[in-house]
Length: 200
Image 1 (cartoon, one colour):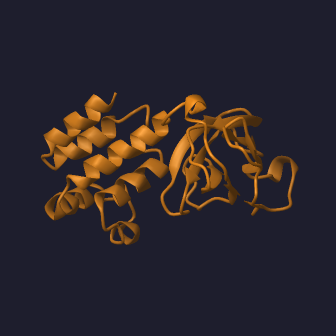
Image 2 (spheres, one colour):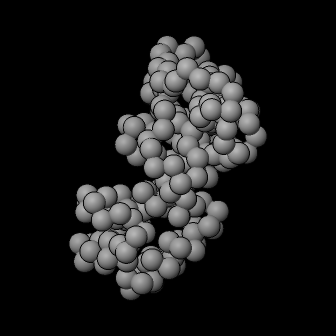
């Protein structure tokens, strides 16, 4: 368990309320060996919470459908700053970010291990690491034509960057990897499509 309190928390959201309120994380706290996250969906009917350690690479950790609620993010490292944000379907903005820093040791006997979301992210990293320049070129060709805007696609320098963009837009999901498998088969990487299937 974490043996200390929160030592830093940044809040970046707007002053609004009622029907015009946008989805926002309202509170972060370290409790019982995990980070507790409270949210308010505002006018949205559903959304998803994402976590990052660098504000560049984001992992979806929770789909939320209740207007308000709380979620416990487990299996984290001590002495680490984590960033959180809540987004809604088809939202092209980066969202509003809050952060929290943990310190102290984690009691491994009470660590529930790596979450499904982290395993999914690791699978994407592993698949991407086995793709060469020709694979990336074919992947980007298959993601053109409106799937990923040309200006954004041109800036993607690794297969993981492409996968992560598709994941943030809910094209690739932890509970549905069919589209990812199709993409890999289109570029003649049936071996990697099989690896994705084995993830389940």
